[in-house]
Image (tube, rainbow, N blue to C red):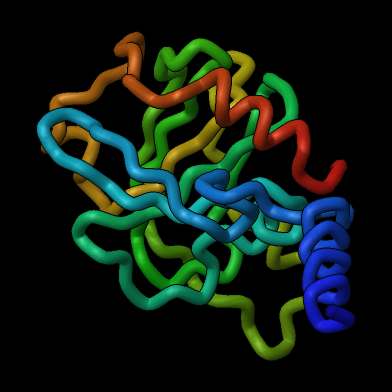
Length: 173
């Protein structure tokens, strides 16, 4: 009997624990399956400050059906850069209702030099702007958006309302 009560208490505690993930609801670092053009992608979710800051920096490859979706708690003008990135990337910025506001192919930048300060390194990196307020950004392998036939002004079939709720529930900026 005591084991049964202990099991019930443990189960209820887990359900009530702050930050407890709901089944089927992706967390920061989880995956979101989306259809872009005629292909399905499993995108890693970057919803917390640390994961959005790190992005795909340091990655040496992106799977053909992979990439990253950045989810922000609100729509703002966004600016990305290739900090610590060793591979070329495509990025599409997306507004709160799913329209693409900008697309860029971001080339590899020369890595930070041994004698280069962080401030000097950051100052020389070009920025890639969303052009208009964006709440999401999607990074894929270079040339992907062109291959998929996706252009600025297109509406992507992503679950914007659900993603917005996830982004607002993620750690605050």
